[in-house]
Image (cartoon, rainbow, N blue to C red; front, top):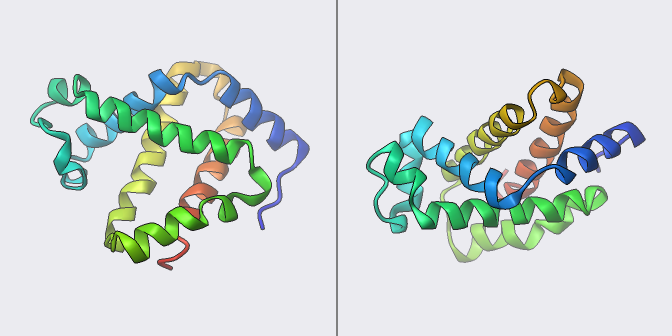
Amino acid sequence: MVEWSAAERKIVADVWGKISIDEIGPQALARLLIVYPWTQRYFGAFGDLSSAGAIMGNPKVSEHGKTVLGALDKAVKNLDDIKGLYAKLSKMHYEKLNVDPDNFRASYLLADCLSIVVATKFGSAFSPEVQATWQKLLSVVVAALTSKYF
């Protein structure tokens, strides 16, 4: 179980309270697909991902980015049981969907892209202390999502 200090809880709540799922989610996923083009292979059903412009304008990328951040919203609201929160999702990817564990490497990259988008949006308010707490949250979420694999 991960321990969260009162200061960390406040930082997570403050950052999350300023995030627009509809804005940040699509930007983060698009950044992942543009910066790490090999990750596009996991999104073959999304249609045209042939250029940065196509990715940025792709409605499936946008919707999935919103879905990802919607799932992160659940973690923010359940800091004390993130692993339990994502247990069924991790199990489904492992047992039912038979997702290759290598696919989850992209989860770490998406977390980094999300941090970059948030840092760009918040500017100097995304201090090293805020970033450290934010990275802790994202690391816990990715670990929970991959728990059935490792």
